[in-house]
Structures are given as C-alpha cells and as structure tokens.
Length: 441
Picture 1 (cartoon, rainbow, N blue to C red):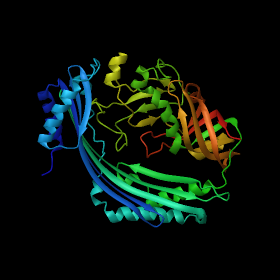
Picture 2: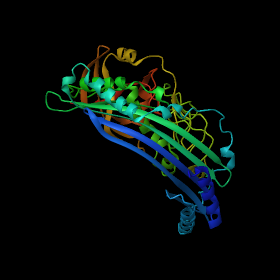
Picture 3: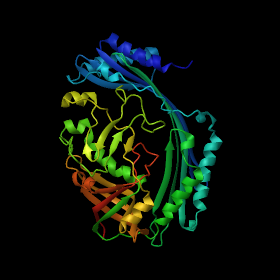
Picture 4: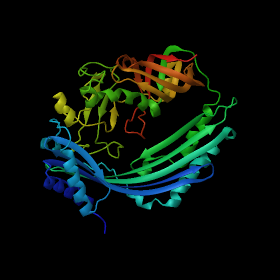
C-alpha cells in the first residue's frame, strides 16, 4: 500500500512534540527521475530511480537540529524522531532559532503556477532514446562534421513532490515536472587541441523545450566555430556577454546578497541598500510567481508566502535575500531564503544589433573556472568567445581572462538585450559592458 506522504510529515511533527520538542517542521518528499545518456551512436546509460524521504527540523529547549531519514515505517520513524530529539538536547542553545512568525505564511498567492505537465505520462522509454539519438544525428549532419571527435547527448524527466508541515500551523504541497535535453560535442583542431561546446534546455513542460535536432545542431555548430581559437590581445574593451552564459557572471553578484554573508561579514554589499551598485540598466526583480518558471513557488523553503520584490532597481540595491534566522540576527525583516526567478528590466535590442553597435570588442560565449570574493567584490573569470570587428562576429578567441570588482564593474553596463535565457531561473539577457579589463596575450 502506498504511503501517504502528507500523513508522514504530520506524524513526524506530532512525534517530535510527544518526544519533548517545542516545535518542529517536517518536509516529506518523493521524486521519480528517468534519464538516457547516448554517446557516439549507442546508448551509454539508462537510469530510473524513485526516492522518498523525510527531513525534520527540531526546536528543543532553545536548541536546533536538522535530521533526515528514508525509513518511513511508523515504528522506525518513532525511534528516529525520539533519538533525534534526545541528541538535539546535547547541542549548544541558539536563541535565534525558531519557526517563522505565523503572519509570514499569510497572503499566499492563489494562482496556478502550472508546474506539472500531464504530458509526462505519455513519455516512453522509446521516445527518450529516440530524442537522444536524434540530437546526435543532427550534430553529425552539420557542415564540417568531419572534425567532430565525439558527441554525447542526453534526455530525461523528473516528477518531484513535497509536503511541508509546521507545528505552528503551516501546511503546503508542491508538485513539479522537469524535462531536459542536452548535447555536448568535441572536435579536433589542426594543432591537436580538442575544444568542446554544448547546448541544453530545461523546461517545466515538455513543449517548452526545442526539438532534439535543434539542440544537437546548435551544440555542433558552436563546437566547430571554436576551431582555430587563439588568445586575443589584453585591453580594456567592450564585452557583449551572451544571454546563455550571463548568469554565470550575475550569479557572482548574488552571492554576497545572502543574509548569511551579511551577518558573517563576508559581503561587500553590506550597508549598500539604497545605494547605486550599477548602471540604471541593472534592473532586476525576484519573481516567484512566473507560470511554468523553473524557480517558481507559492512558498519558500521556510513556508513564507512567495512575493515579487525588487533586488536592484535602476542600479540601486533595494533588497537582500534574508531568511527568518538571519533576519533575527540582523534585526531585519525577512524577504526569502534564496532566489526564485529573476525578472530583468526589458531590453529593446537583439544580440545581433548589440554586436553591430559594439563595433569592436568581444562576444563572450563561455566562462571557464575563475573565482569571486564576496567579501571584497574582486572577481576573475576565464572566458572564450569571438572577436567583434567592424560590428561583426569574427575569429574565435580562448584562454582569456576577465577581472574586476563588482562594486565598479556593473556600473559599466551599457545595454541589455531583449532575449532573456529561457532555460534557467536566472533568465539573464545579453549584457553589454564598456571598458571591461580583459587579459590575453
């Protein structure tokens, strides 16, 4: 007989109370995922897994612990919770640990976020294999494919379900599907190097993703365009950062916005609320209520009602990502624990036009490795892409490096594209920076 996972969460919180906990928050979950990996003409791996488990936050005599288990039998759960409460009593007290105030649960949006696609039921093993195969065949049909060394493709889908129960009155349920497809292509250069490129897509609904042939074609076209890449000259120049990879750059700015970084003095953005961090074109909101969004939610990881709020408004920092724990430590009102979907202020131009207007510079199509210091704001990222010459994409470049400081770099933003990347919750558009310091030869 199937286990009712909501009942499991309710039972766990009741057991915690009986064992002596003042409060508890339980999250039970179940996930089923299927994937196919295909490499050079044949299936390399097929996997199918269903997992379920319980995570339990315990508040015991001013002490706090998080424990988890996958053994959901009633008798095993009773022992597990009892032992966990006893162990929590051994920990040091933390006066800031408590469940959120009940008022923070209120006002939950009454909208259908359309996170579950009923089309999942019609996806068969044959269909997954055919999609992975079609992506490879399309990659190998691209002009110049004789330089291709290897093609790896994959596809898969997931149904995830979770149930959250708090002893102070919150209950919430979430069901969501994900569908993904990817292709990675390696090619052989004349000097023996083997550059690689990729393409991928992820959507809540199957119909949101492109056809497998398009994914394979784009991956191969990008890989072949890397042939002959060389370092460019060091200079301060205009960068046009492709929407697909701009999230790697902007994500480094998000890190020091967390409540933990602020409270632990690891944030270069501490005390910067209300100040301009970037150009007026840096206009970004956190929007958890986007239908079918990859980061969409009605409530966050603490049960707080999800709401849209500005993060950066015309370059000015408006909000941090602060949960209730760090909110109490910082004496600040909580917003939410972490990002959902990002909503960027609208751009008016496509990437091709932005490249033409740049005239000279670099089109950045990939960031490689690197680091970013959230305390100082200094960052350094390897990059690859193409020289922009006369407003046109020219020869490929590689093994170059972008460095700067976030507190200065984002003021160099001079244009935002009209092309938010749809396969990430970051949803970054093409970004253009002037006077960026790039090192090469």
